[in-house]
Structure formats: C-alpha cells, structure tokens
Length: 171
Length: 315
Image 1 (tube, rainbow over the protein chains, first blue to last red):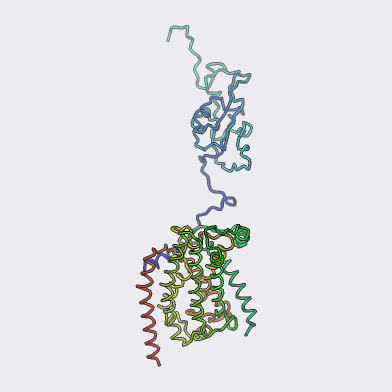
Image 2: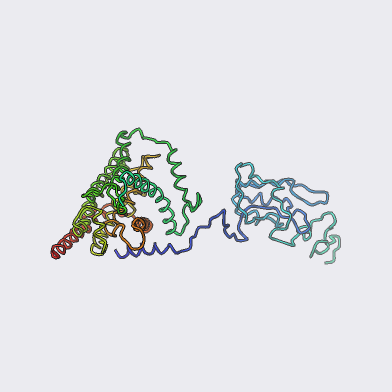
C-alpha cells in the first residue's frame, strides 16, 4: 500500500525533470567528430585527388556498395575513372576508411541523406569528392611514396633514400 | 441564476464531449511529461490540434464489421456506453442552476447508469465473436460486479451525512466542511471504485492490451472504436466530476466563481487518473477480485457502520 503511494509520488516528481527528447529537426543532436555518416573522398593539400584507385575499400566493403575503375593520368598518377557509392546499401561501418592507404575515403558526421527517389542515393565521384583534405590535413600520398610520377623521380620523395645501384657490390 | 434546461443540456453536452476529446491530448501530454518526453506538440499550438487530426483520421477510416460478428448487437454496443455516460451527466450539478435534471434520486440515477454502462462492454465482447473480446467482456462483467457493490456502499456515508440523494443538496450541505474530511475512507474507496468503473489503468482488465489485443474493442474500427474511446474519457470525466461533487464540495470555494471551482476540482482528478495510469501496473485478475471483495467491501461496510453510528449518536 505504502509502496503504491510512493510509486505514484515518484512518478509525479518526474514533472520537474528535464525531458530527454531531442526534438530533432529543430534542435540537432551533438554528433562526435568520429560519427560515421556520409562518405566523402578528400583531396591532398595541393588540391589533387588522394584516391589512388587501389580497390581496397571496395574489397573490404561488407555490402559491396563501392564500385570504382582505376586509370592513370598523363603524369603517371593513378586515380579512379569513376567512383560510385550506393548509399542505399551502405551500412556506415567505416571499414573502407580503415582500409584506405591514402586517407582518401573518409566518413563524416553528416547523416541527413534522405531521398524520395532511391536512385538518388547512388553517389558518383563528383558528389563524393570534396575540395579539402578532410580529417587529415597536410598528408600527401604522392609526396611521401616511392612511386615514380611526373616531376618526382625515384628517391626524391620525402624521407626517401636515393635508390640503390644494384650493380655495385659494396654495401 | 436559473438557466433554461435546454441550454443546460446543449451546454453540458458540448462541454462534456469537447472536454473528453481534449482529454486525449491532455493524457498524452501528461503521460509524456511523467515519462520525460514531450508527447504530441507539433500539430497546432502545443499540439492542441492533434485531436482534430485524429478525429479526421478516425472519421475517414473504414467502418468494418467482421463477418463473424453478431451484427445488430455489435452496432448497438458502442452506442450504449455513450448514452449511459451522457445520461449520467444529466444529474450532475455543475454550478448553481447549471444542471439538466435536478432529480431527488440523482445519486441513485448515477449509480444505475454507470452499472448499465457495463452492458456495452459485455455485449461488445460477446458480439465480436472473438475469444479475446469475449475474455475482455467477461472480465468487465466480473469487475463491475465486484466494484459496483462497494462503490455504492462507499457513497452511503455521504448520503447519511447529507440526508439526501439529491446531488445539488449534497453539494449545498458541504458549504461548511467538504465531505472528504469526515468521509476520508469513503473518498478513498470511491476513488478506487471509480478507477475500476472507468476501466482505467490499474484496473483496465477488460482492455488489457498486453494480454487481450485490445480486449472488448479488438474488432472495432472507425467511429465505433471512436465511440468507445470517447466513452472511456467521458467516463473518467464523469467519475472525476462525481468525486468533486460528492467529496470536494462541488462548486463551493472562496474567491473564484462556482463554475471555475468545479472545473478546477474535476481537472485535478482527471490529472490524478492519468498519473495513476503513468505509475501503476495492471493488476492480475484474481488480485482485482480479491481486493474488491476481501478488502474494499468490508472496509466500505465498516465505514457505513461507523458513520451511521456517529450520525445516530449526534441525534
């Protein structure tokens, strides 16, 4: 009997509590910077595409929502000819971001991607590519890698030793 | 201030019906408040037009009668609850002069009408031709039998003190002291019986949406379901008004006009009914029956006995 009255009183005290509801479209919930939302492709600090079309992201994707085709430009830089993410399949697991060797593919805290037409959820490269470096500023894959491209010979990358002359026998 | 009875009828009808519709919104907002949510707050100011939207929806729904139902009874059952509850409002003294019919046996009329209301539930459960509905109807019948008895008995203390069955004169007899003080036990008993009578949450066994789909109105849709729904809220309003009239001095109170006092008291009890729903779980069926017969009924009898003895001794 007493417990019933105490229950009623305790429930009544909830009139003075803060409400836990976040009224979403009016007030936005706080999303941590690591929230996994819409996927983007970033550029390096010099404005070039970071993606080297290695296919690791599409290989690791558990729902196979990433499709791309590799090609090479006149400078010898690999880049994707097309890069397509089907967001109606994407589960925002973030494995593609983990797999990416060049920090090109990144997940952002934006989740508001509702569409009336399902076809509109297939994002092409021009939809994915942003103009900045995303979470990793200052990193440029082509500047540190040993791959030879136009204007940067072997051994000219940052922290890279000149290539060994394999015909010399001295160590 | 004696107004025309037809004006009273129309006024009480409009106020009662719109109040019970408004109550749906009040209940949802208050339940949300006590569960730390907001409830409907998007349609119109504070979500007030939510009721209107729901009404439009319920009116445009298909009014389906299942082929296995007993059609005439199925149709007539929701009307019974509306009629009986609205009839009870006829004897309700809202303010001096605002009463449809100042019956000498107003209290008995109210008790009789609220007992008749259970036919609606039982017939709805029976006519639906559905085992869950039937179970709900059966529970309603058993619940009403257990609760009508001590509901009536708990009011007899008030009748003894006031010396009349006339509700207006009961209110006038409380000018000095509200009966909630000398009849506190009767007040508590009537409150519990009222919750059972209105089939509200600790005692909503006929509906019991966790066990019986929706109990007696499982098969109802469209406006027939709407009638049950409005009937339920009218029932709560009626019980709250009766508590206000019988125990809290009806329209009596200082400073404010009588109508305001009456509405404040009724609204407080409406909120209390909703608070009960927010806080208490549903009783098991045998618990309900044994509470009614083994605890409430003897208490009501004892209350009547003591009150009678005191009234006799004072003479």
